[in-house]
Image 1 (cartoon, chains in turn blue, orange):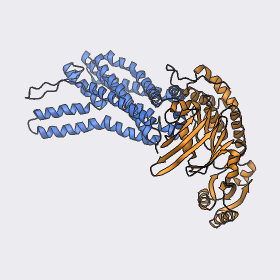
Image 2 (cartoon, chains in turn orange, yellow; image 1 turned 135 degrees about the horizontal axis):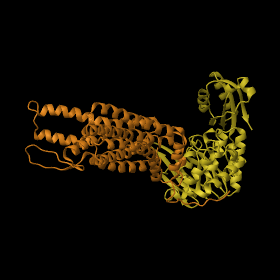
Image 3 (cartoon, each protein chain N blue to C red; image 1 turned 90 degrees about the vertical axis):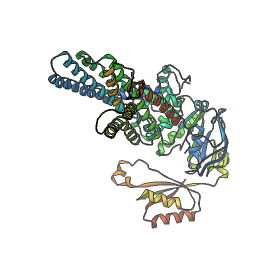
Image 4 (spheres, each protein chain N blue to C red; image 1 turned 60 degrees about the vertical axis):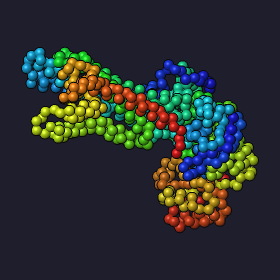
Length: 305
Length: 307
């Protein structure tokens, strides 16, 4: 038996990343997921294009409207993928190791907890990114038809990548805390559903209720209603769907990509705030860093019980 | 090679290890002997740097498990009593993966895995998915895995639990071979008889405290002679285990099942259950145990002391 020469090379591919990717790409399931996802997204895009095209006037603006519909459909699919598929890959990353009784033998190797967590994260994100990039060529259909500015793609990409990162890390953290993968997956989806769907829904209900209460007769705006609108915009910035919708609305109205300026009737106050997609990107990146550190700490924590 | 100094481990309201001290010289096969719940697994987990001690320290090749866990991990190969494998890896990939986790350069891994699989007599299974191995083969694969970074100390929890008699013999031979290669081996077992003819040193761990420690023969001479009673029966294993555990003189009880031969299977012998009872009571206690089993509806087929 040869005595191996031991040192952890800094630039070599992480063994966990290599193992997870090899395991994932070796099975037919990965290719089936990719093919089915692409087939569904491209099929629905073409269907949407045909329906929109038939219902639109044969003018440049009509073509642009079709392009906008296709573009935002594709963005919506990317957001759903980032929000629900990325965490699915990480929700079992650590809890499965525990269930399969492989976690202890992994923890006694020379890999640090940070290396284990990082490798689990990038291997899960790697496949999600593959799915995301695979649909990028479909965006050319929207740009061909017009009605969409390349700058709107910046909004979509920032939100999609920040969401994929944050939700994957959220699932990883929950996985590190959970005893079972089923528990980790259910907990993650409950939180993600709450943020992605719950926040816009609550905002919609809250907005309708407060609008009725504050301007019951005239329908005119008041400083209080303006303040509420601004707070609502900040709140809905935390959900990828509503953040994209609000950013696109401000961009279409003012041509301003990075900021928006809420109006406060009668007060003369001019407040410039970051666009909702920037707020989401910032908040999600900060949350990602915190979740990463918490997950590493959790994995590193020497057994106490 | 391994020095344990006044090691204690307490959880909320429970002390698992209480001032444990022992010393295992290089090349020794050191048996930590004790019944279930004595603290054997906790001791090994502390030495593997998986669990932090509440007090005291332990040194592996001079490195402290408290202050230098990474140095300890370079020196230690840890095999838990029940470990999993990755279903999407072959045996060779499994060993190569752990070699990579210990920083063995990529160019050396394939040859190293081949060498180790040959050592544990699994080379012919190198392309078999690791989760399709029999328990005995999986145990040997585990040994190959712990050797991937050429550690000086091996920590083996419950050496041969769950293995059939032939696999136990093979495992013993393998460990002797590793010891002859200069490895220090710390293993746990429920009784001295389990590791007789294998261990050079032993320590008796009872309720978290070392009661005897030293060269194996000395420990054997000063320790109450545990006997093993094999109980074969038809019926509920849990009921039988609970009755046996409650009896006087019982130190430990473990399920034991040999694979049934085709003729046995035809005769319905697969329904036969077997428990191995580690016993240090009087013959009268054994007689009381047998009566209590029979009166409780356990259909005892045989009740025999093993040599």
